[in-house]
Image 1: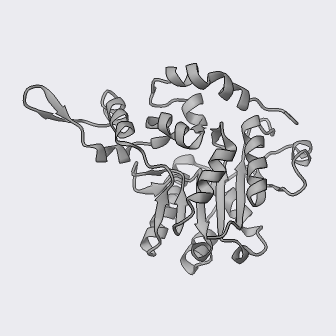
Image 2 (image 1 turned 180 degrees about the vertical axis):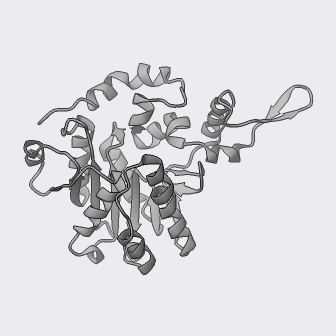
Image 3 (image 1 turned 90 degrees about the vertical axis):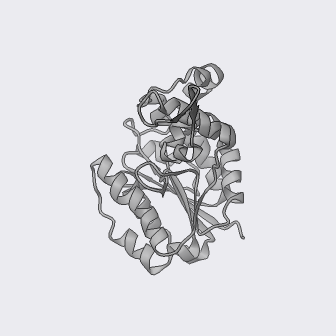
Length: 273
């Protein structure tokens, strides 16, 4: 396939500033293809500090990342001229932007490609980074899906209606979806072991006090949390909500010891960092 790619980057921060992670990633994306940044609150002086080839669009703070994606997609003058159009957001810290972009580009061999797939709730590509091939994005069902998208400001409703709904639309219309990240058996096993004390998974108990883990059930866990270590190794990314909220109270000692200073540095905000 060709490497003619456009990117739509959805940005949000309470300060209206870019952190080092986002700024570094934007520069790698700019070098890889056409780039549009859609932000709800990026300060004018911060936007003007970006490379002149990066188009910045500001909008009202409603609808979460999906509405930013919609606005960005509508701003692409000739989408048919691109092999793939990628939508991604600022919900993750990228330690190795060049590695991420290169890995994504070499993985664009399906109708729709995401970084990670999950069956948590329902089978879906996680929406923080999804690449659409030209024929999918310009197909009638997908064009209609985006056209009907409305700005919803309740997070769980956005997840159920749009994150889950997008994959349902794609699968229902016969499009092939795939994830770049394919966890190993070791990562799946570790994920299930973390899920057991949380009551998210119950292993089958066998005679002689042995337990059997069905690794297929790991697909029902959020890979960006329960398989963070292998995801970081393979793609160089870590989700912000894992660092900031850690809702499942996963042991992040190894993350802090190995990458804590680097992640803290990349999450610092400010102009021209």
